[in-house]
Image (cartoon, rainbow, N blue to C red; front, side, top):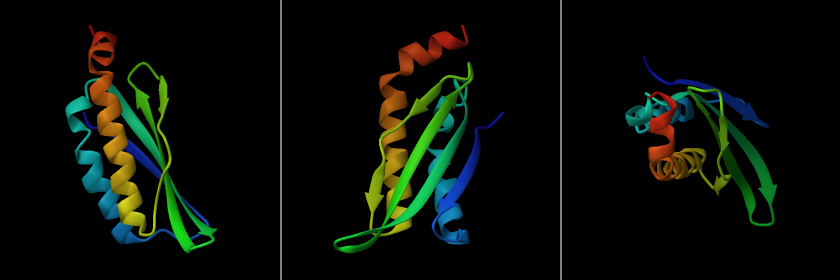
Length: 105
């Protein structure tokens, strides 16, 4: 059984290249598949003083339906924002590893 993912684009139409990057990054979380049932990824385009940038947010759902909300990651390129938020997810799930493994004991 794999990890499901929903992607929402805010302020711009989604692009296949962003969705492909998100799919590649999701593979990094597969080692946590026993404890993680899915995730919700939101990518929003924003305008700042230096121009346009992308903000990515990721909520991870555990197999017990606990929601782990991760910090936002902002980058100029949407793919970089997606990679950054999955970096955060991997670190957070790694830190929670012992607690998450108890969910399915």
